Amino acid sequence: KNEVEQSPQNLTAQEGEFITINCSYSVGISALHWLQQHPGGGIVSLFMLSSGKKKHGRLIATINIQEKHSSLHITASHPRDSAVYICAVWNYGGSQGNLIFGKGTKLSVKP
Amino acid sequence: KAGVTQTPRYLIKTRGQQVTLSCSPISGHRSVSWYQQTPGQGLQFLFEYFSETQRNKGNFPGRFSGRQFSNSRSEMNVSTLELGDSALYLCASSLASGATEAFFGQGTRLTVV
Image (cartoon, rainbow over all chains, first blue to last red):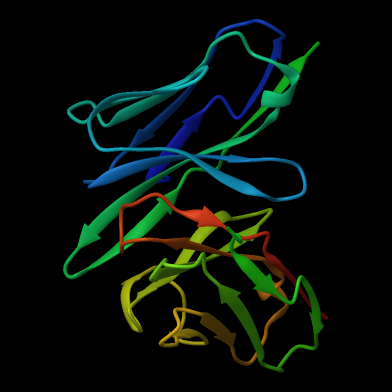
């Protein structure tokens, strides 16, 4: 079983819909990242959070440390939101940390 | 402000050879981290350097190594290349080490034949 699980793997939405992508993890973490990867490979860091909720424009990220779960919400989705969304967690064992990635959620927003 | 620059963008190597990839971080950033992305395994963390010291490390064999120079530029080396090392190698730079906002380069596409 992967230490970081994302769902769904693929998601197709109509423009304007509210979208939720989920990330569950099984290890202790110090922080969680949400990343966006567009076709062509470029990766953008959307959020880094260790508790609570963050909002940036139409994007909202939440994390529940007790339940080991995070969600990424996109309000009023747009075709330009089409990308792969990746969750990653920082896990520290001993003196060094390891960043563990989920497999990603491929989002396609249709006009 | 220039972004993270990776060179070369594309590379073809033969099995058994070694390869060195370069990453120049955003000016002022002292942390550089490296990642491997393959269709099968997705993104995987290789290691992170901060102020010329390896601070964090993923689960890769010793064939994968790196270093960071005093100007924060970093190199990643893979020795004795295997076909399975074919991947997109990404680097990212940050102001601080560990859990902090990272800015990614466009990557180096390595093909091992």
